[in-house]
Image (cartoon, rainbow, N blue to C red; front, side):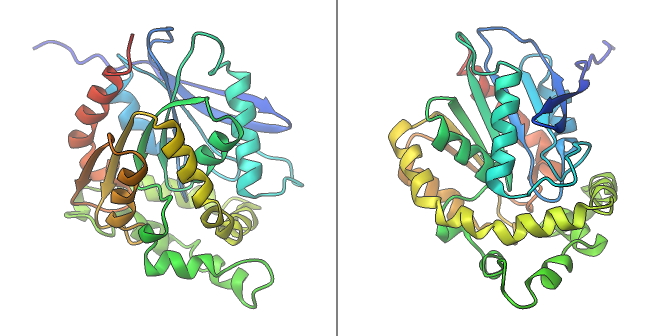
Length: 295
């Protein structure tokens, strides 16, 4: 039996305007291979991409940072958390690593909070993103579930909003985000939600997460601008969606086809964190899609 060879994954930090951004990197860094920037969501970190990086890192160049307020990334005490601020940091990260230097191409994998960050980045730099992999990252109002619509009503100044948001930063809710909508919760490793909760419980993280949740409504307000970018630039796109997602419905996945009619759409019987249960089905699709971008 031949030995299974997994790619080496490096773990580094880079300073972006005082924010110490932790990131994982693997795969061949060549001009004929696009770099894939993996942007995680709430309440996770780059750890959520660990198995995908193992599966694809021998052939594809993958970089996964922890956003400010998540994982191993450290921000100054006076960092003002908002989706614009997260985008500022990711913009600086892309520039610091030279991911859009001449001769290089950048593909972006977006999940949950990673979607608003990537689409805000596309507003600022319309030509930076050459391809998209969208996994349960919403950009259309029809994709908002009742739970998501209720969250959007929570914003600064609304009585009780901070306390209601604080209520979702618990181990019970974190675990439910991983196991909810899956076909078999026994297939979901507890390591993901346990690690996420560890980071959520770090000093100051509750304030960061509350600020971001109360800012989420600004993303919905920008949906029309993001849709114009999608329709105007028509990047090659692969859309992967767990149909048991309690936050973002399958209608949100289908809505992308209005602006990206050539996109590939695949729906899976699973939940929000689709990679946790359907990695073996999703990986070949991602591999083939990235293969079409090579050369």
